[in-house]
Length: 297
Image 1 (cartoon, rainbow, N blue to C red):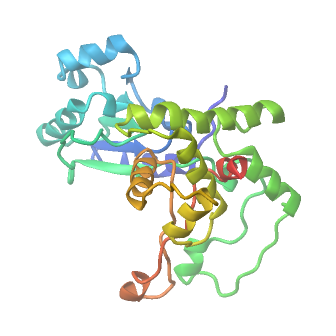
Image 2 (tube, rainbow, N blue to C red):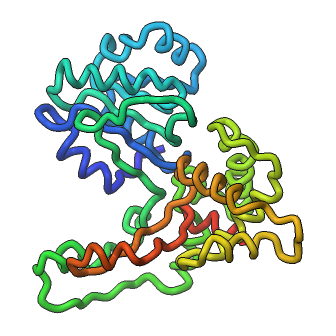
């Protein structure tokens, strides 16, 4: 399948070059396209979901500097020692454009690694934006507006309300959005089930009541684009139940779901220099893809 160029590619073209950034960590939920994007500019791909390659790197972390660069290390968090080996490699040779680390989760709780500050730059990837989906190009640039380059805000779009709704339901995951409708729904449902049944347990979260977690996720999805309090969300997840999960349990859900990039809250934003005022506002609740929220509710 032909590669769909992403917005992040423009940034990588500018910074992941000789004389630029030496190591970049592409981070995001499973299925957003990190591997496809990284593969476009890698001479060597090390896939740590493959048992053989993971064992080879565990036995010899120096392998990452012995293969031709640029090197893409996919799902690096499965062998956390890789992070520190890349960090040291950057210290030894900061020439630029050497390592891409793709990850869909942070390291498991209790595993300590260096932050990578000053050596490895973290770059988030999300599902396809509307401007990446082949719809008519945007006619108003927010960046140009904030830079004072636009005197008047004007423009038009051919995208109808029906088409916007269709795009929400189709998903921005590249491997899901072009499936037939029934297959797409099943794939989205399967994605959500895998989060509860596999992704969270594999990443150190003990899910003792999967149905309760699923209900909490549905309540969170219903609160999309609001700043509803977490007590409100918890109450919505357990209507009429006396034996509700404690707030601490819900906080653990939230922490782990954010760590694997499933929850993607949008921080408060005020178009003025008022940092203290901004800190008084709560973030808006969002899942990584509105299609997931639509399936949950």
